[in-house]
View 1 (tube, rainbow, N blue to C red):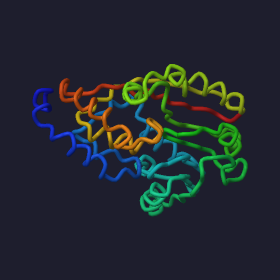
View 2 (view 1 turned 135 degrees about the vertical axis):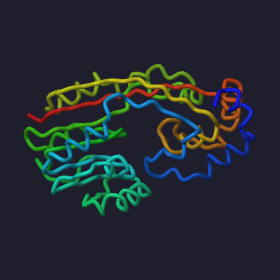
View 3 (view 1 turned 90 degrees about the vertical axis):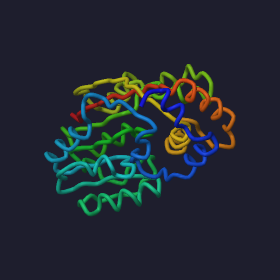
Length: 259
């Protein structure tokens, strides 16, 4: 579908807003966005690499697992497999998805300490953790254990975020891989590898924007439709004019080792 086709096909603003407000935003399954938004994937195939590492591990921990959707793609889990999550709707989804696979889901507030003994796991993983407690990750890993994760990088989706919040020059440095690696080394980790990618996001209607800002709540803290209705209306006009709103995601893949 080209931009002209999309422009003509878009329902009225209020109808799209209501649609974005009503849809369930629990878990980390973004399939509702099919046809409404696209995001280019990084080249390294995180889910596939994660599955390979899980198959070779003895005891694994997935931190901030969300609804368990990414972890559940693995074909085989180690004898001890644990996942943590803090948000109750995600906990319920992860439990339903992962318990039948033999993965224990633990409610955890995403603040230290992690509820596990020292040297408990030989593999700790995470996809897009909101907070990173390097000392705790190091503590629960066994010597020669691995932390393998895909993190959100600096200025990710900032074209959209700054549309609502205005310029955020200082915040653009946040989550930089160089800074994270420095903190990881301070906690005792050794860097094995790091890869970075900046990929394209395309948003085709304002319902997708409402859905995203309700789901990824740290992008525009305190977002509500009522508080941002006029700005949403302005963005809706941009999408209708151009057929798309373009932003860019930033990701990095980290492999760290506990000596």
